[in-house]
Amino acid sequence: MRTSDHPNLADELTAPKPRKIIALLVMQANHIVPTTAMARELWGDNPPASVQTTLQTYVLQARRLLGRALGLSPADVARRILVTKFGGYQLNLSQRSVDVNEFARLAAEGQQAFIEGEDERAVRLLTEALDLWSGPPLVDIQAGPLLSAEIRRLEENRLTVQMQVVDAKLRLALHDQLPGELAGLAAQYPRNENLHAQYMLALYRCGRCPDALDVFRRLRERLVDELGLEPSLKIQALHRAMLAADPALDHGAVPTEGNLLLDRFAPTAPGREPWVTRRAS
Image 1 (cartoon, one colour):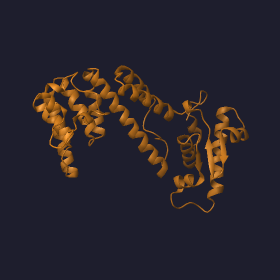
Image 2 (tube, helix red, strand yellow):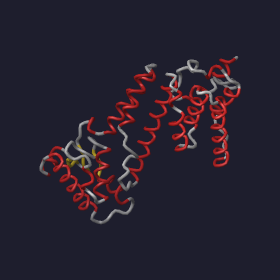
Image 3 (cartoon, rainbow, N blue to C red):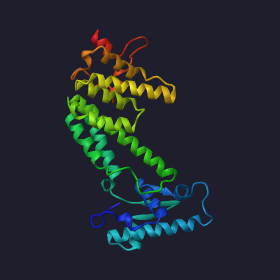
Image 4 (cartoon, rainbow, N blue to C red):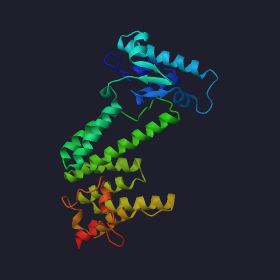
């Protein structure tokens, strides 16, 4: 939380519960946050008897903080910024003043550019979206059940954008830029098959087929040992294509259907192989 005069405004509010209140209000900016939701975030299923009074105290602290940042009195903040609504509170902010909203806007525009085949524009927009991240979401908040769900949502959205940037770069023949980044992502998400498929294809196109096959081997061992599952048919098809040196894996041969790389390796009908094998035949 920052303004032009306060680069890290939230540091002025050290108490954990008021910080959680502000985080919850920011994540739901321009929407009413019920007091019941606030209480659940702060105390779970065991709120104190004085829950309403305590929440009012935390909201007052938040208004004072916002007032100092914006040069407004707490009364002005209560009237215009952090307002009381029936059953809850609402934090009024412009859409672009919240990084989460700006990330969502840039990601949506980048994803549309990707769908339309404008890969350079997609990479630019999606990278701008990722550049808004300065670390894990809400890292300085002791998240309760609601904020924990928000953190998971944000992390999933970030990962989706990261994978789409990789797909766009693969279509632009920028595979030589990807192995280092994908090695880190595959280690961070060791069961994510799409990331491993991207890593395999980037290595393969860099002339590192043995390394690409080793990525599959490690993924399979992990899935079998930890979950008792074989890899999906999609990534198995990619693995077989690499063993056969299928020319369909070369740059320019991968079609644009599907939102993520593995979508393009799915069988189209029972008993039929994915597009890779059909193309090679």
